Length: 316
Image 1 (spheres, rainbow, N blue to C red):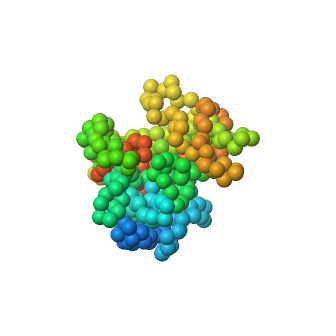
Image 2 (cartoon, rainbow, N blue to C red; image 1 turned 90 degrees about the vertical axis):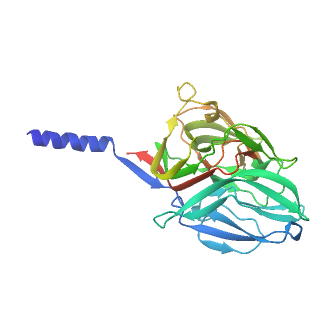
Image 3 (cartoon, one colour; image 1 turned 60 degrees about the vertical axis):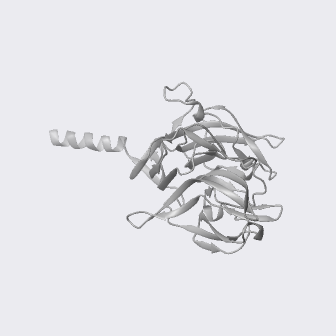
């Protein structure tokens, strides 16, 4: 009788804690598109390599890449730019082999310069980034990089956690570069860190084409110190509803006015986050994995963030 009771409770416990782990498409980092971009002669005319986490392919032309093919939800900080006829490739995200022979995603924070006739005219600070959504190429200006990003993908699930493998190099220095291209880069006080977050949003579009959103679920973590060895199966819990009263809540976990999306008219427009409601059904998911936590063109060159096996965890 005792054995039967023990078996019953073990089975009950297994059912209570059962879960399902779904790899996000291409989240195993084993499939990449390689792009070869020939830069303008004014910039030296070299051929640069850009990578996209996407179906395996090789592209040898200076052309915008069409993100979202084959159900792929990912875009990156790598981009092809064409500014008044001057073509350039900028890449801070690359595939890299792990010790077991599998492939991961490496994201670096780098100072990128544009050289014209042997002189540096523009320098910008770019963190390596992997996110759900689309880059809208070609990039035609550095004034507002967010105007070229369509954040998020359609999604209706209710996962309990975002899970991935990671390691990172985070500088202990208490300064960052402010390099927005319009003046010589300068140092300012701050500490750059890698970060990962997931937003589940309920979006709708009004009659004027404005995109509104209610935050349904939030998961957020910053990586403040170097982690040299791989941490496998790291989880970031997703919390539903208003998290502003939680003791661990930080202001940066709240609403981000810089995020944009393409409306039904094909126009890039700000996502207006208006509140919290954990009971609504999500319509979109935003995942951001990045080697730097600051706004565009601000950060610490040399920080690196590696990720692999990006999954969603569901309680059954």
